[in-house]
Amino acid sequence: MELKTVDLYQYFGLPKSDNMAGILTCYIQKTDMEISSKRLHPAMLILPGGGYEHVSAREGEPVALRLLPAGFSAFVLRYSVANVRFPVALREAAMAMRYIRENAAEFQVDPAHVAAMGFSAGGHLCGTLGMLYDCPEIADIGSAQLLRPDALVLCYPVAVSWGATHEGSFMNLCGDDLVLRQRLSLDRLVREDMPRVFLWHTRPDDCVPCRNSLILANALAEKNIDFVLHVYHQGCHGLSTADSQVYPVGQVPSRSENITGWIETMLQFLKELDFVSRDGV
Image (cartoon, rainbow, N blue to C red; front, side):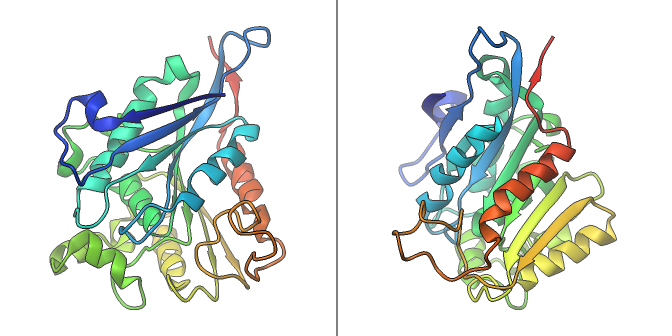
């Protein structure tokens, strides 16, 4: 594995203020030349949660390290948060997608199999990337083909901007702009040409209610988007890998017995979409 960190603003030569982030940590799969000099790996852009107020470390590196043994290269984005509003975080996610594909040959990444995964508010960011990849706010970053993820993994996402949602996320992202808030509700952004989706939530989640995923799943079904939805009957918000890797030993919250298998279930879904290591030409 190769580990590197890049400032995306510096890489693309874009101006950056002191309160902006745009830092991408890259966990790059490297196949030994003795095995194959042309091996290509699928990639995952990881967008941790944090209510657009901070970026959770628990939903970054621990997840990346779980993906490496499955043959993925993983890229964790520390994106800009409050008091930075839309579209800054989306632009940074788009920059990350372009960076991964632009360096695909060097990283031994298959540019046709780059997925994006988001947790909580990061799930909202992931959703907007997968639904607004051709919007005017990021048109200067690159073409829709470069910026569009090939699949989405949404983990207990902040998905709807109305009703029982996570108010803090939308306040941090949109401020008092109610028109923008309505525009960025994921259920209203679902489109027929968006990527396929793996979606999971816990029913008792009292921070980002499960209805966010249920409403989003219904919107996906109405547009005939291929998706998988798992709702676990026990578990709090923000579980990440749901094990002692992200909690103190002996202090892992009560949760459904099989919830720790969500990564394996998700990987199987992606495998069915041909997210596998392959030997290139």
